[in-house]
Image (cartoon, rainbow over all chains, first blue to last red; front, top):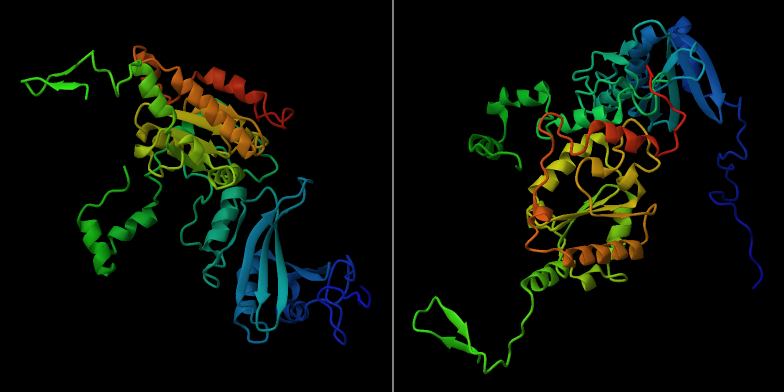
Amino acid sequence: MSGFTVVQSGSAPGLPTPASPKNVPHRGGEANPSAEALKAQFGAAILRVDVVWGETNVTIDPARALDIVRWLHDDPSQSYEYLSDVTAVEFRDRGLPIEVIWHLRSIKYRRFLRLKAPLAKGQPLAIASVWSVYKGADWLERECYDMFGIVFEGHPDLRRILLWEQYTEGFPLRKDFPLRGRLSRAEQLRQALAANPEARYSMEELSIADAFQELPLDMRARIRGGESTGE
Amino acid sequence: MGLIQSPTPSVVSVDPVNSEGWITTRLDFLVNWGRANSLWPMPFGTACCAIEFMATAASKFDLARFGMERMGYSPRQADVLICAGRVPFKLAPVLRRIWQQMPQPKWAISMGACASTGGMFDNYAVVQGIDTIIPVDVYVPGCPPRPEALIHAIMMLQKKVMKDRMSDSAARVEMEPDPTSQLYIPPSRIDKLSEQFGNSISQTRSGQ
Protein backbone atom coordinates (compact mmCIF):
# COMPACT_ATOMS: atom_id res chain seq x y z
CA MET A 1 0.00 0.00 0.00
CA SER A 2 1.95 3.00 -1.19
CA GLY A 3 1.82 5.76 -3.71
CA PHE A 4 -1.14 7.66 -2.30
CA THR A 5 -1.24 11.39 -2.91
CA VAL A 6 -3.14 13.54 -0.44
CA VAL A 7 -5.78 15.51 -2.35
CA GLN A 8 -7.60 18.28 -0.54
CA SER A 9 -11.28 17.80 -0.97
CA GLY A 10 -12.69 20.11 -3.61
CA SER A 11 -9.31 21.11 -4.97
CA ALA A 12 -7.87 20.23 -8.33
CA PRO A 13 -4.49 20.97 -9.85
CA GLY A 14 -4.36 24.24 -11.73
CA LEU A 15 -7.51 25.68 -10.13
CA PRO A 16 -7.72 28.19 -7.30
CA THR A 17 -8.13 26.77 -3.82
CA PRO A 18 -11.79 26.74 -2.88
CA ALA A 19 -12.89 29.13 -0.18
CA SER A 20 -12.93 27.60 3.25
CA PRO A 21 -12.51 29.03 6.76
CA LYS A 22 -8.85 28.05 6.53
CA ASN A 23 -7.96 30.36 3.67
CA VAL A 24 -10.53 33.15 4.03
CA PRO A 25 -9.79 36.01 6.44
CA HIS A 26 -12.31 36.81 9.14
CA ARG A 27 -12.44 40.47 8.20
CA GLY A 28 -11.57 42.07 4.93
CA GLY A 29 -10.88 40.61 1.55
CA GLU A 30 -12.48 41.11 -1.78
CA ALA A 31 -16.00 42.52 -1.59
CA ASN A 32 -18.83 41.45 -3.84
CA PRO A 33 -18.79 43.77 -6.89
CA SER A 34 -22.45 44.53 -6.21
CA ALA A 35 -21.42 46.55 -3.15
CA GLU A 36 -19.60 49.11 -5.30
CA ALA A 37 -22.48 49.16 -7.75
CA LEU A 38 -24.90 49.82 -4.90
CA LYS A 39 -22.78 52.70 -3.66
CA ALA A 40 -22.71 54.21 -7.13
CA GLN A 41 -26.45 53.79 -7.54
CA PHE A 42 -27.78 54.70 -4.10
CA GLY A 43 -25.02 56.77 -2.50
CA ALA A 44 -25.97 57.81 1.00
CA ALA A 45 -28.52 55.01 1.39
CA ILE A 46 -25.61 52.56 1.63
CA LEU A 47 -24.41 53.01 5.20
CA ARG A 48 -21.59 50.47 5.40
CA VAL A 49 -19.97 47.59 3.55
CA ASP A 50 -18.27 44.79 5.50
CA VAL A 51 -16.62 41.66 4.24
CA VAL A 52 -16.85 38.95 6.90
CA TRP A 53 -15.56 35.45 6.21
CA GLY A 54 -15.52 36.27 2.52
CA GLU A 55 -19.18 37.28 2.44
CA THR A 56 -20.30 40.82 1.79
CA ASN A 57 -22.65 42.53 4.21
CA VAL A 58 -24.17 45.78 3.02
CA THR A 59 -25.87 47.90 5.66
CA ILE A 60 -28.60 50.02 4.10
CA ASP A 61 -31.02 52.73 5.03
CA PRO A 62 -34.28 50.96 6.00
CA ALA A 63 -36.33 53.62 4.24
CA ARG A 64 -34.75 52.66 0.89
CA ALA A 65 -34.82 48.88 1.44
CA LEU A 66 -37.49 48.10 -1.11
CA ASP A 67 -35.85 50.29 -3.79
CA ILE A 68 -32.49 48.64 -3.23
CA VAL A 69 -33.87 45.10 -3.29
CA ARG A 70 -35.90 45.86 -6.38
CA TRP A 71 -32.91 47.32 -8.18
CA LEU A 72 -30.75 44.32 -7.25
CA HIS A 73 -33.44 42.03 -8.61
CA ASP A 74 -34.29 43.96 -11.76
CA ASP A 75 -30.99 45.39 -12.91
CA PRO A 76 -29.38 43.11 -15.50
CA SER A 77 -25.91 43.85 -14.15
CA GLN A 78 -26.94 42.48 -10.72
CA SER A 79 -29.66 39.91 -11.42
CA TYR A 80 -30.28 38.66 -7.88
CA GLU A 81 -33.00 36.22 -8.85
CA TYR A 82 -33.20 34.31 -5.61
CA LEU A 83 -34.14 35.41 -2.11
CA SER A 84 -32.71 32.84 0.32
CA ASP A 85 -33.90 34.27 3.58
CA VAL A 86 -35.49 37.17 5.38
CA THR A 87 -34.70 37.28 9.05
CA ALA A 88 -33.81 39.65 11.85
CA VAL A 89 -31.32 39.94 14.67
CA GLU A 90 -31.71 41.60 18.02
CA PHE A 91 -28.47 42.11 19.89
CA ARG A 92 -27.76 41.48 23.54
CA ASP A 93 -26.93 45.16 23.90
CA ARG A 94 -30.48 46.45 24.05
CA GLY A 95 -29.41 49.86 22.80
CA LEU A 96 -28.36 48.52 19.41
CA PRO A 97 -30.97 48.57 16.67
CA ILE A 98 -32.74 45.45 15.45
CA GLU A 99 -31.40 44.43 12.06
CA VAL A 100 -33.62 43.06 9.32
CA ILE A 101 -31.54 40.86 7.04
CA TRP A 102 -32.05 39.69 3.48
CA HIS A 103 -29.95 36.97 1.91
CA LEU A 104 -29.84 37.46 -1.83
CA ARG A 105 -28.27 35.16 -4.38
CA SER A 106 -27.52 35.80 -7.99
CA ILE A 107 -27.57 32.57 -9.91
CA LYS A 108 -26.46 34.27 -13.10
CA TYR A 109 -23.30 35.82 -11.62
CA ARG A 110 -22.83 33.31 -8.77
CA ARG A 111 -22.91 36.02 -6.15
CA PHE A 112 -24.17 36.12 -2.62
CA LEU A 113 -25.13 39.35 -0.92
CA ARG A 114 -26.39 40.03 2.59
CA LEU A 115 -28.37 43.21 3.16
CA LYS A 116 -28.89 44.59 6.64
CA ALA A 117 -31.31 47.34 7.59
CA PRO A 118 -31.06 48.63 11.17
CA LEU A 119 -34.37 49.53 12.80
CA ALA A 120 -33.89 51.82 15.80
CA LYS A 121 -35.44 50.87 19.13
CA GLY A 122 -38.19 53.03 20.51
CA GLN A 123 -39.89 53.41 17.17
CA PRO A 124 -42.48 51.19 15.55
CA LEU A 125 -40.64 48.27 13.97
CA ALA A 126 -41.81 48.62 10.40
CA ILE A 127 -40.12 48.13 7.06
CA ALA A 128 -41.25 47.71 3.49
CA SER A 129 -42.14 44.21 2.37
CA VAL A 130 -40.21 42.82 -0.59
CA TRP A 131 -43.14 40.58 -1.49
CA SER A 132 -43.76 42.66 -4.60
CA VAL A 133 -40.27 41.66 -5.83
CA TYR A 134 -39.92 38.13 -4.49
CA LYS A 135 -43.15 36.18 -3.92
CA GLY A 136 -41.11 33.77 -1.79
CA ALA A 137 -40.78 36.47 0.85
CA ASP A 138 -44.37 35.82 1.91
CA TRP A 139 -43.75 33.15 4.57
CA LEU A 140 -40.27 34.40 5.45
CA GLU A 141 -41.66 37.79 6.39
CA ARG A 142 -44.54 36.19 8.25
CA GLU A 143 -42.07 34.19 10.32
CA CYS A 144 -40.02 37.29 10.97
CA TYR A 145 -43.17 39.09 12.08
CA ASP A 146 -44.17 36.13 14.24
CA MET A 147 -40.87 35.96 16.07
CA PHE A 148 -39.80 39.62 16.22
CA GLY A 149 -42.93 41.67 15.68
CA ILE A 150 -41.49 43.51 12.70
CA VAL A 151 -44.30 44.80 10.52
CA PHE A 152 -43.63 44.37 6.82
CA GLU A 153 -45.65 47.08 5.13
CA GLY A 154 -47.17 45.97 1.87
CA HIS A 155 -47.24 42.29 2.77
CA PRO A 156 -50.50 40.78 1.49
CA ASP A 157 -51.29 38.58 4.51
CA LEU A 158 -49.13 39.47 7.50
CA ARG A 159 -50.09 37.23 10.42
CA ARG A 160 -48.46 34.65 12.63
CA ILE A 161 -47.20 31.54 10.90
CA LEU A 162 -45.60 29.28 13.56
CA LEU A 163 -47.49 30.35 16.65
CA TRP A 164 -51.24 30.31 16.62
CA GLU A 165 -53.07 33.47 15.72
CA GLN A 166 -54.61 33.95 19.16
CA TYR A 167 -51.15 33.95 20.78
CA THR A 168 -51.05 36.85 23.21
CA GLU A 169 -47.68 36.57 24.93
CA GLY A 170 -45.64 38.61 22.48
CA PHE A 171 -42.77 37.91 20.11
CA PRO A 172 -40.56 35.07 21.34
CA LEU A 173 -37.21 35.96 19.78
CA ARG A 174 -37.14 39.44 21.27
CA LYS A 175 -34.63 39.82 24.06
CA ASP A 176 -37.25 41.07 26.51
CA PHE A 177 -39.28 37.88 26.07
CA PRO A 178 -38.79 35.43 28.94
CA LEU A 179 -37.84 31.97 27.71
CA ARG A 180 -40.80 30.31 29.40
CA GLY A 181 -43.28 32.88 28.15
CA ARG A 182 -45.21 35.40 30.16
CA LEU A 183 -48.14 33.30 31.37
CA SER A 184 -48.17 30.42 33.81
CA ARG A 185 -47.96 26.90 32.41
CA ALA A 186 -51.57 26.16 33.32
CA GLU A 187 -52.78 29.32 31.60
CA GLN A 188 -50.68 28.58 28.51
CA LEU A 189 -52.14 25.09 28.36
CA ARG A 190 -55.66 26.33 28.93
CA GLN A 191 -55.34 28.81 26.07
CA ALA A 192 -53.78 26.19 23.81
CA LEU A 193 -56.52 23.64 24.50
CA ALA A 194 -59.19 26.25 23.96
CA ALA A 195 -58.02 26.62 20.36
CA ASN A 196 -60.06 24.77 17.80
CA PRO A 197 -57.64 22.86 15.55
CA GLU A 198 -60.13 23.03 12.71
CA ALA A 199 -60.51 26.79 12.88
CA ARG A 200 -57.06 27.78 11.72
CA TYR A 201 -57.97 29.55 8.53
CA SER A 202 -57.65 33.26 8.18
CA MET A 203 -60.25 35.48 6.62
CA GLU A 204 -58.01 35.61 3.55
CA GLU A 205 -58.07 31.85 3.20
CA LEU A 206 -61.79 31.76 3.81
CA SER A 207 -62.24 34.34 1.09
CA ILE A 208 -61.80 31.40 -1.28
CA ALA A 209 -65.59 31.37 -1.14
CA ASP A 210 -65.58 34.63 -3.05
CA ALA A 211 -63.53 33.01 -5.77
CA PHE A 212 -65.83 30.01 -6.01
CA GLN A 213 -66.57 30.49 -9.70
CA GLU A 214 -62.86 30.44 -10.54
CA LEU A 215 -62.13 27.13 -8.78
CA PRO A 216 -61.56 23.89 -10.72
CA LEU A 217 -64.69 21.87 -11.40
CA ASP A 218 -63.84 18.95 -9.12
CA MET A 219 -63.09 21.25 -6.20
CA ARG A 220 -66.33 23.08 -6.79
CA ALA A 221 -68.20 19.77 -6.73
CA ARG A 222 -66.60 18.79 -3.43
CA ILE A 223 -67.36 22.09 -1.77
CA ARG A 224 -70.92 22.05 -3.06
CA GLY A 225 -71.33 18.55 -1.58
CA GLY A 226 -70.71 20.00 1.85
CA GLU A 227 -67.50 18.04 2.44
CA SER A 228 -66.46 18.42 6.03
CA THR A 229 -63.00 18.30 7.53
CA GLY A 230 -62.13 15.14 9.39
CA GLU A 231 -64.24 15.10 12.51
CA MET B 1 -68.16 -32.44 20.42
CA GLY B 2 -69.23 -31.01 23.70
CA LEU B 3 -72.14 -29.05 22.38
CA ILE B 4 -75.65 -30.34 22.52
CA GLN B 5 -78.03 -28.46 20.34
CA SER B 6 -81.17 -27.98 22.34
CA PRO B 7 -84.55 -27.74 20.63
CA THR B 8 -84.59 -23.96 21.07
CA PRO B 9 -81.71 -22.68 18.92
CA SER B 10 -80.88 -19.70 21.13
CA VAL B 11 -79.89 -21.88 24.11
CA VAL B 12 -76.48 -23.58 24.16
CA SER B 13 -75.65 -25.97 26.94
CA VAL B 14 -72.54 -27.93 27.82
CA ASP B 15 -72.30 -31.65 28.28
CA PRO B 16 -70.12 -31.99 31.38
CA VAL B 17 -69.31 -35.63 30.66
CA ASN B 18 -67.56 -35.07 27.37
CA SER B 19 -65.16 -32.20 28.13
CA GLU B 20 -62.81 -32.73 25.23
CA GLY B 21 -61.89 -29.44 23.49
CA TRP B 22 -63.03 -27.31 26.38
CA ILE B 23 -61.16 -25.21 28.84
CA THR B 24 -62.47 -23.26 31.75
CA THR B 25 -61.03 -19.90 32.62
CA ARG B 26 -62.05 -16.57 34.01
CA LEU B 27 -63.57 -14.30 31.43
CA ASP B 28 -61.41 -11.51 32.84
CA PHE B 29 -58.29 -13.44 32.04
CA LEU B 30 -59.39 -14.42 28.57
CA VAL B 31 -60.43 -10.89 27.59
CA ASN B 32 -57.32 -9.32 29.07
CA TRP B 33 -55.11 -11.91 27.42
CA GLY B 34 -56.66 -11.08 24.08
CA ARG B 35 -56.34 -7.36 24.64
CA ALA B 36 -52.80 -7.43 25.97
CA ASN B 37 -51.50 -9.44 23.07
CA SER B 38 -53.12 -7.46 20.30
CA LEU B 39 -52.66 -3.87 21.34
CA TRP B 40 -52.94 -1.72 18.27
CA PRO B 41 -50.74 1.34 18.60
CA MET B 42 -51.61 4.77 17.33
CA PRO B 43 -48.19 6.30 16.66
CA PHE B 44 -48.09 10.01 17.41
CA GLY B 45 -44.51 10.70 16.42
CA THR B 46 -43.38 14.31 16.47
CA ALA B 47 -39.60 14.14 16.87
CA CYS B 48 -36.53 11.94 17.15
CA CYS B 49 -38.30 9.48 19.48
CA ALA B 50 -40.39 8.54 16.46
CA ILE B 51 -37.20 7.36 14.74
CA GLU B 52 -36.56 4.99 17.63
CA PHE B 53 -40.19 3.96 17.47
CA MET B 54 -39.75 3.10 13.80
CA ALA B 55 -36.69 1.04 14.71
CA THR B 56 -38.77 -0.73 17.34
CA ALA B 57 -41.40 -1.56 14.77
CA ALA B 58 -38.86 -2.69 12.19
CA SER B 59 -37.40 -6.15 11.82
CA LYS B 60 -34.48 -5.98 14.25
CA PHE B 61 -36.58 -5.33 17.35
CA ASP B 62 -39.87 -6.46 15.82
CA LEU B 63 -42.73 -5.04 17.80
CA ALA B 64 -44.95 -7.60 16.07
CA ARG B 65 -43.73 -10.19 18.59
CA PHE B 66 -45.94 -8.37 21.10
CA GLY B 67 -49.00 -8.31 18.91
CA MET B 68 -48.46 -4.70 17.89
CA GLU B 69 -47.60 -5.03 14.25
CA ARG B 70 -50.73 -3.30 13.16
CA MET B 71 -50.18 0.45 13.41
CA GLY B 72 -53.51 2.18 13.64
CA TYR B 73 -53.06 5.42 11.81
CA SER B 74 -56.67 6.12 12.57
CA PRO B 75 -57.35 6.75 16.25
CA ARG B 76 -60.73 5.07 15.90
CA GLN B 77 -59.05 1.69 15.31
CA ALA B 78 -56.35 1.97 17.96
CA ASP B 79 -55.84 0.89 21.57
CA VAL B 80 -52.57 2.53 22.60
CA LEU B 81 -51.51 6.07 21.89
CA ILE B 82 -47.72 6.20 21.73
CA CYS B 83 -46.70 9.83 21.93
CA ALA B 84 -43.10 9.89 20.72
CA GLY B 85 -41.55 13.31 20.86
CA ARG B 86 -42.17 16.81 22.08
CA VAL B 87 -45.63 18.32 21.82
CA PRO B 88 -45.83 22.06 21.24
CA PHE B 89 -48.76 23.98 22.62
CA LYS B 90 -50.11 24.37 19.10
CA LEU B 91 -50.35 20.57 18.89
CA ALA B 92 -51.99 20.18 22.31
CA PRO B 93 -55.60 20.42 21.07
CA VAL B 94 -54.76 17.97 18.27
CA LEU B 95 -53.37 15.38 20.69
CA ARG B 96 -56.39 15.88 22.93
CA ARG B 97 -58.73 15.40 19.96
CA ILE B 98 -56.96 12.21 18.86
CA TRP B 99 -57.18 10.82 22.37
CA GLN B 100 -60.88 11.59 22.57
CA GLN B 101 -61.45 9.85 19.24
CA MET B 102 -59.95 6.58 20.48
CA PRO B 103 -62.54 4.09 21.76
CA GLN B 104 -62.36 2.57 25.22
CA PRO B 105 -60.49 0.63 26.48
CA LYS B 106 -57.44 2.71 25.61
CA TRP B 107 -54.02 3.36 27.01
CA ALA B 108 -51.28 5.91 26.48
CA ILE B 109 -47.49 5.62 26.47
CA SER B 110 -45.45 8.77 26.84
CA MET B 111 -42.20 8.00 25.07
CA GLY B 112 -39.09 9.97 25.90
CA ALA B 113 -38.11 12.87 28.11
CA CYS B 114 -39.85 15.55 26.04
CA ALA B 115 -43.24 13.88 25.95
CA SER B 116 -43.03 13.02 29.63
CA THR B 117 -41.76 16.30 31.06
CA GLY B 118 -40.96 18.73 28.25
CA GLY B 119 -37.35 17.59 28.55
CA MET B 120 -34.81 20.18 27.56
CA PHE B 121 -37.51 22.28 25.90
CA ASP B 122 -38.47 24.22 28.99
CA ASN B 123 -39.64 27.15 26.90
CA TYR B 124 -42.66 29.10 25.79
CA ALA B 125 -43.71 26.69 23.06
CA VAL B 126 -43.60 23.15 24.46
CA VAL B 127 -46.08 21.33 26.69
CA GLN B 128 -44.38 20.30 29.94
CA GLY B 129 -45.49 16.69 29.89
CA ILE B 130 -48.39 15.29 27.90
CA ASP B 131 -49.97 14.07 31.14
CA THR B 132 -51.29 17.59 31.43
CA ILE B 133 -53.34 16.91 28.28
CA ILE B 134 -54.23 13.21 28.39
CA PRO B 135 -53.95 10.50 31.08
CA VAL B 136 -50.74 8.52 30.61
CA ASP B 137 -50.22 4.88 31.65
CA VAL B 138 -46.51 4.31 31.06
CA TYR B 139 -43.66 6.82 30.88
CA VAL B 140 -40.50 5.83 29.04
CA PRO B 141 -37.34 7.67 30.13
CA GLY B 142 -34.57 8.36 27.66
CA CYS B 143 -33.54 10.91 25.08
CA PRO B 144 -34.53 9.16 22.94
CA PRO B 145 -35.25 5.81 24.61
CA ARG B 146 -33.69 2.76 23.04
CA PRO B 147 -36.09 0.33 21.37
CA GLU B 148 -35.57 -2.05 24.28
CA ALA B 149 -36.89 0.64 26.62
CA LEU B 150 -40.03 1.04 24.55
CA ILE B 151 -40.51 -2.72 24.45
CA HIS B 152 -40.10 -2.79 28.22
CA ALA B 153 -42.78 -0.13 28.50
CA ILE B 154 -45.07 -2.14 26.30
CA MET B 155 -44.52 -5.22 28.42
CA MET B 156 -45.33 -3.16 31.51
CA LEU B 157 -48.48 -1.99 29.79
CA GLN B 158 -49.38 -5.58 28.98
CA LYS B 159 -49.04 -6.43 32.67
CA LYS B 160 -51.32 -3.53 33.48
CA VAL B 161 -53.86 -4.73 30.94
CA MET B 162 -53.75 -8.20 32.45
CA LYS B 163 -54.66 -6.76 35.84
CA ASP B 164 -57.81 -5.16 34.48
CA ARG B 165 -61.03 -6.44 36.04
CA MET B 166 -64.33 -6.37 34.21
CA SER B 167 -66.13 -5.79 37.50
CA ASP B 168 -64.14 -2.62 37.99
CA SER B 169 -65.44 -0.30 35.34
CA ALA B 170 -63.72 2.76 36.77
CA ALA B 171 -60.61 2.12 34.69
CA ARG B 172 -62.56 2.35 31.45
CA VAL B 173 -64.47 5.53 32.21
CA GLU B 174 -63.62 8.33 29.82
CA MET B 175 -61.98 11.11 31.80
CA GLU B 176 -63.87 14.30 31.13
CA PRO B 177 -61.84 17.49 31.37
CA ASP B 178 -63.08 20.45 33.32
CA PRO B 179 -65.60 22.09 30.97
CA THR B 180 -64.42 25.65 31.49
CA SER B 181 -60.64 25.23 31.45
CA GLN B 182 -60.44 21.94 29.44
CA LEU B 183 -57.82 20.70 31.91
CA TYR B 184 -57.74 17.27 33.57
CA ILE B 185 -55.74 18.33 36.59
CA PRO B 186 -55.94 21.56 38.60
CA PRO B 187 -53.96 24.53 37.24
CA SER B 188 -51.94 24.88 40.43
CA ARG B 189 -50.77 21.30 40.05
CA ILE B 190 -49.76 21.87 36.42
CA ASP B 191 -47.68 24.85 37.48
CA LYS B 192 -46.09 22.89 40.31
CA LEU B 193 -45.25 19.95 38.08
CA SER B 194 -43.88 22.15 35.31
CA GLU B 195 -41.59 24.36 37.35
CA GLN B 196 -38.96 21.86 38.37
CA PHE B 197 -38.13 20.42 34.98
CA GLY B 198 -35.85 21.81 32.38
CA ASN B 199 -32.71 23.85 32.28
CA SER B 200 -34.03 27.34 32.80
CA ILE B 201 -34.77 27.28 36.51
CA SER B 202 -33.28 30.75 36.88
CA GLN B 203 -35.46 32.11 34.11
CA THR B 204 -38.29 34.10 35.63
CA ARG B 205 -41.40 35.33 33.96
CA SER B 206 -42.04 39.00 33.54
CA GLY B 207 -44.07 40.40 36.38
CA GLN B 208 -43.00 37.74 38.85
